[in-house]
Length: 81
Image (tube, rainbow, N blue to C red; front, side, top):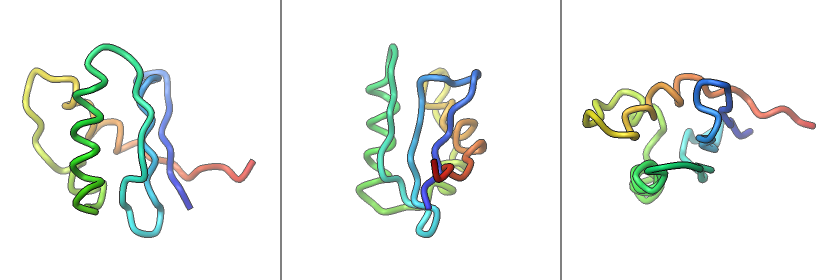
C-alpha cells in the first residue's frame, strides 16, 4: 500500500511512501526550490530510512525543506481507484 499526500496547503509536493516499509518511493515536486526538496528526499531514499525519521528531524530555517515534516504528517492511504 502506498501513501501520497496532497492538499491545498502544499499542492505541489506529493511524496510517495511504501505503507509497509515506510520508505520513500519517490516524489513529485513542482515550483521554486523544488530541487532542494528533492535532494533531501533522495538522501532518505538512498539510505532506505523511514519517512518518520525525516518527519522528526529539525530542518534548517529558512528553507523550503522545512515544510517536509508538515507534509509527511498528512500522509494518507492511496485510494484503490
